[in-house]
Amino acid sequence: MASANPFILCDNLVKIYKVIDHDVVALQGLDLVVEQGELMGIVGVSGSGKSTLLNILGGLDRSSAGRVWVDNKDLLQLTNLAMDHYRLNTVGFVWQQNSRNLVPFLTARKNIEMPMILVGEGIKNRRKRADELLESVGLTERRNNRLSELSGGEQQRVAIAIALANQPRLLLADEPTGEVDETTAQTIYDIFRNLTRQYRLTTLIVSHDPNLAHHVDRVIAIRDGKIASETIRQPGTNGNQDGVSSQNQDAGVQEFQELTVLDSVGRMQVPKNYLEKFNIGGRVLLEVTDEGILIRPVPEADQSWDADVLVKTLMQSKKKSRLQKLVGRWFGGMHGRHDI
Ligand code: ADP
Ligand code: MG
Image 1 (cartoon, protein in one colour):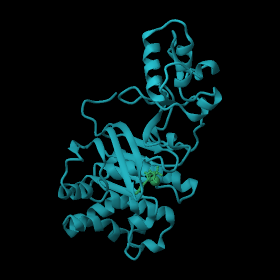
Image 2 (image 1 turned 60 degrees about the horizontal axis):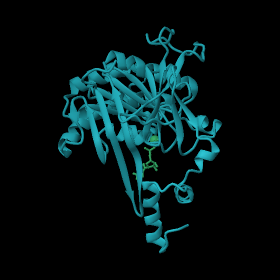
Image 3 (image 1 turned 45 degrees about the horizontal axis):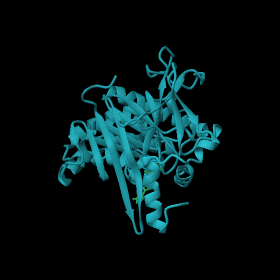
Image 4 (image 1 turned 180 degrees about the vertical axis):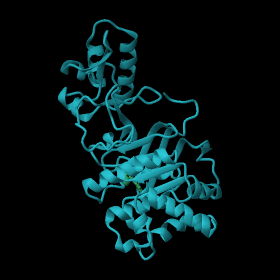
């Protein structure tokens, strides 16, 4: 149930990148509401706008239009200084490539202390927080190892701890399991779930993992810069809401339900395979039935109702309707004659 004051609110968000000879519309009117405490997944093909959305929510980039509120802050209105503060204190970011998260020649613990040094935290608090986070991600034993001595999965766990160093309220992860094997990915998802509950975070994870729905509360799919659908756990199914690992779960077809999302003005994206199956393109017939609204392909003959056919049909008709006269005037005006 959406609250009156959600943690994240994106309203008609637009992001346009200007490149030399054209504009790239990366987000085209994206609407999104996320409640405080949610663990959410984001999927979508490459180029659909996932990273763009995360960068805007993380204060790394600004949208071109629309509204974006996070934790009661209007991100479009923040000054650059306030945005720096927001990035350091409100958001934690985990990237796919470890090189963006970590300093290889420092120990795990020193890496986690780095963001705290930036906000002027004293040594005692830094140590305490770093050790607590190392324990949360299961790396207490490895705290004095340099990053270069840790495995890819361990490095990614340090990256998560770094992201949480300054006690953010929002945790953003852009394909955090992209470079680790399936078992390690499972561990990382479990860590995200536990940390989200332990620190009362709101967490958004971008992933290509087809099983993502098993690891998070809900999954939204972005298509062409808009939220196209949302996958939720069906009511009454026995999911891993309580933090139980989902590895042994039967990936039952009925367990999750993908819902198509309508935007604020009633637009929706119909999956391409559905359109192809019924040969639907361009215009459609919407029919209200007892069950709901039916989308029908327009019969071949009706599809040909194009402007030129309309003009010809009107001009051939014996009855001189108003529309017919109007069309006649246009036609005469353009071609210097009134009959066709
Ligand atoms: P995803 O993360 O889903 O793969 P992105 O958000 O990175 O998608 O990109 C969305 C679209 O915006 C793509 O067409 C991409 O090429 C374009 N894009 C992303 N960043 C930039 C940029 N800095 N300059 C120009 N175009 C960009
Ligand atoms: Mg991306």
